[in-house]
Length: 143
Image 1 (cartoon, helix red, strand yellow):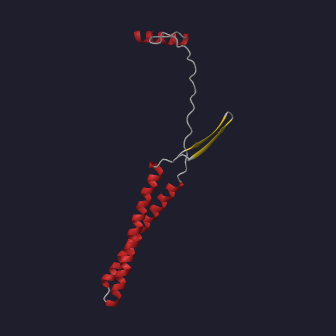
Image 2 (cartoon, helix red, strand yellow):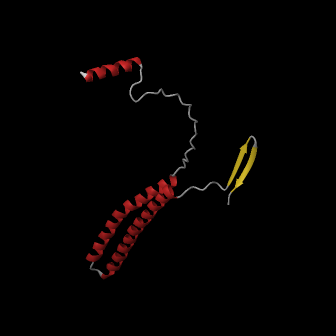
Image 3 (cartoon, helix red, strand yellow):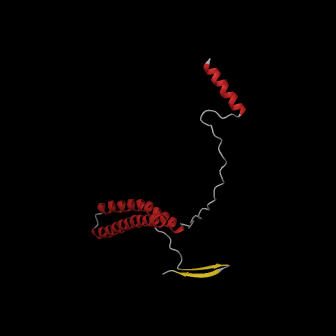
C-alpha cells in the first residue's frame, strides 16, 4: 500500500512541476561559454610516403618469384654435367639470386622510408615568409 501511495505522490509532484527529493533548488541559467576556435589541421599531403610504401611493397612481393627463379636456376646448375655450361649456369644463378636479394632489401628500405616520411618526420616551415596585413608588413627569414 505504501508503494502505491509513494508512486502516486511522485507522479502527482512530477505532473505539478514540484521538485522532489534531491532536486530542491532550481538551476540558474549559466552564461554562454566563450567559443574558442580550433587551430586548423595541418593537412599536408603524404604522396611521397605512399609512393615509397607502394613501391616497397611491390618490390618485396616481386622478390619471391625472383627467388623461386633463382632456386630453379640453381637446380639446373646442380643437374648440369657439361663443364663448359656449368660456369654459365652458376653465373646465371648468382645473378638471379642477387636480383632477388636486392629487390627484397630495397623494398624493405622503401617501406621503412615511407613510415619515416609519414609518421616521424615533421615538415619544416618555409625559410622565408611574407605577412601582409592592413596594419603591417613583415618578412620572416629562418635559417
